[in-house]
Length: 325
Ligand code: ADP
Ligand code: MG
Image 1 (cartoon, protein in one colour):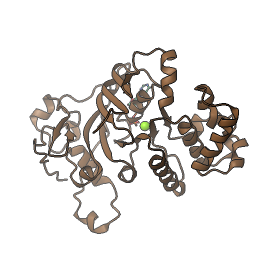
Image 2 (image 1 turned 90 degrees about the vertical axis):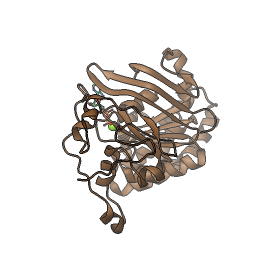
Image 3 (image 1 turned 45 degrees about the vertical axis):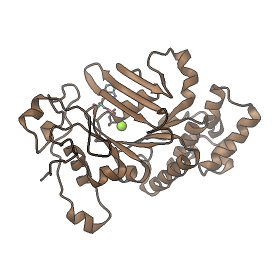
């Protein structure tokens, strides 16, 4: 990676009382890079995303945006830095003010950050509506007068209006009709390529990360278990949890599907109030040994390509144990 990362997380912890939602996450995102964050529901993905955009204060750790740690900053000092990062949520209805028009929603970040004047903001509004594929006359409407897909386009336009260096997208298509999911995913890909913002793309949809992300981080029970380049992760998933996630995902090619070992993950994700000892995945791992019950595996580089894995059973050269169902 060259140059300073847009985002650097260093030992980020977020507890809600006894709930250890995020429990020590470190990672970086380079300028213009799309990092996919995957994992089952309840693994802490949304909480991590909210920590990144400083919507929720962290319990411990550092969150550096363009080299500046946001964690110790007062609200007043944080305000100008918020221009650099924004978020789109799963359900756009909840995040759009129902009393505001589309025009006011999209241009609000420009007013908050005192960017431009009324005329330049009107011009920017026209550009943004065009960029997200909305007709200009929708600007006068209110969110309830739009379809779900149109509302998510408005959220995207708003999130991008002040030109952030980083966009956090938290399951941006999963509340939408299947028929519009692909269109919104394509739109995000096109905007990212055109505008060059970095993106933390949170999803449980592996096909979506394979389409969008250059690098993928796999989260389990508040921690990262594997971080790898897209091609590497899909060709040679190393952590048993990653292997299980991939084996459960549908493969479009039936020939590939037949060669896949299916590893069924049994049981639910354990409670983050009292996570399992040692390796947090040991209660569901078909390969767990005694060491896995007592010794916590650290996220460490394996193999030639800088892949990071937290598993005792993966060799330093990246050789991973074959999983059988
Ligand atoms: P994901 O997005 O991966 O589904 P979340 O970040 O939403 O995971 O949740 C991680 C864990 O933190 C879950 O056990 C969830 O119940 C818990 N959690 C999330 N937000 C809160 C909160 N505000 N108060 C208490 N527990 C929370
Ligand atoms: Mg979530």
